[in-house]
Length: 327
Length: 209
Image (cartoon, each protein chain N blue to C red):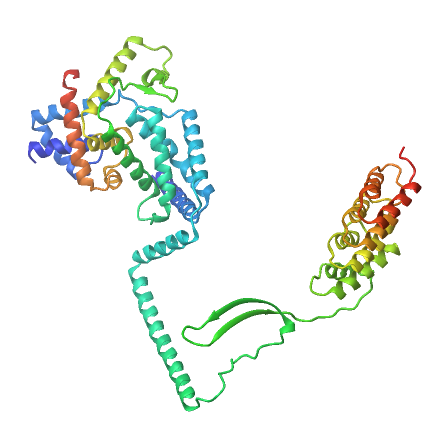
């Protein structure tokens, strides 16, 4: 070992990075060379001197401040678009495959094989189709293999895909399975179905029947709880498109106008906003005197003074004359 | 001996477990999890700040490097391929930013023994280090402070790359192989750069010996 090499290695050795066998060689050289011994002392002295310039630990405030600033910057970044995420995922997958050459090769072979086979099958099918068309040019268009079900049983169409360069279309749909159940009006399951039926936007008649049945249950005092049937009737009163259904809902809510402030509010809303005069008149008729509630008098005053319909104004004045002053 | 051997095995197992946990965090962060990325930041933010602070001497600059480094990490974590450790990857980003910072500085501040905080006030780093002896020696402290200033001045004479290698080896204690990976070079090149840096420093500090 010469001095130049020894002096290079003693720096590495001073930092503990020289392999053991080379350390031994270096020690032997240094033992016999005064210049290199001096050089080594200087390297070690430099290490001690350099430590005078100490590494300061970042104070907790700096760490916290930096972290907060980073959080704000990350929050301000726009989210990645879907194609950026997909692109990254694809690139990551390719990169993973790069690290696994055998797997990549197998995948390539399998993919090529599947592609060749698929192409062959497709070409065969096209040739057969073309041959059939050629042999009977006047034939009607090819019927799809799967018979189209009755439209009445279809709940929704979830997808449409057209085969390239052909008249063939794949349509995915969800089918309704008709079911029937029989039970008592007191049965919670039956009630649930009836409540669901009040929201059935497809069939007017079904909504009509369900509201009528539920209203009858409430009028009869059969477990018409605040949540459940009573709520379903309030929803029907507020939102159903049929005046007859809204009227039936009113009838069902009549027993609860005095005690349930939510029912009272729904009825007052009907007085003010319903589009059907008969429903409004019926709603006014339901309002009974409530000693603690001035909202009834306020609505009736408003309607009696400013409503466009003379009939509504009359009816509301009549009710007002029967409602005593509030305490 | 058996006990030491068992200790080595359990430390090795612990390192393996930590590595596996970190890989899970990285994968989650790649999938878009902010919480996972935040956990990764918390693992390395102290070291990143320490390095940036020691190199730049400025809290403001250290914060900027921290911000830029972790934003880059967030942006490009999808490109991380597990070919090296995340530690090496993030440090690679940080060292490149620090190198850019060193290269941008056309003039060096005279006094580098102080750190400038965000309000612009200077904090004497050497004085702020607590003396855990029962009673301190002011004269000795002053000597050390002056020496620190001289060291810092000598460090500014190195090229940015030499400064970086010396910083990472002497002050951060990294292995030359890791330093090579971080600076996108070989271990041999890092070794040669360290040698050149120490030679220059010895020449600068010759009058102190």
